Image (cartoon, rainbow, N blue to C red; front, side, top):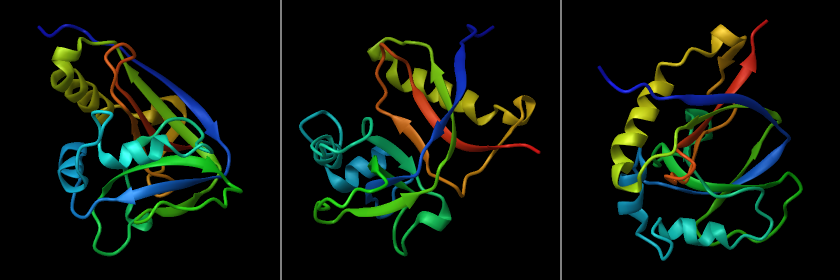
Amino acid sequence: MHKAAFIFTHVVERPARRLILRRGKEADNYFDYAAEVGCGQSNNSTVWDVLLRIPEAVGEPVGLWLPENMRSAGTGIYAHGVEVPADYRGTLPEGYDIIDLAPGHLMVFQGEPYADAGFAEAVGACMARIDTFDPRLYGWRYAPDLAPRMQLEPRGKRGYIEMRPVTRME
């Protein structure tokens, strides 16, 4: 029998905002993306290092799985980005894009803390459990075309955190 693991879930409301991102070429996951863009100083991608220096950022950089309606021709599903206010008019780093995100809700999933040495197993197990979660049981449905699926930087002390766009069921 496997040890039970808890995933804490709640819904947050997000205002209209913009997303500064660097798209991958073919990547559909973090490791392939990092191989495409290179590793940076913060033990993440070089893109992550750039995103950390955007002073107007709302929150921390995130890994993104872009829905088809937010992908550019010739790009992969996975990207890195950071949200900025809806009225952001700053300069974009070279090679980066910006997209508008409508107001909406995100269902936040947070796994239990884990030992950094067990990173791959802990994150993989949490992602697999999230994939089987049915938000309809709680009056929500996934709305993947409204915003990207996002993951925060996995940190053992806080657990794996992923966010998926949702709308209320009627």
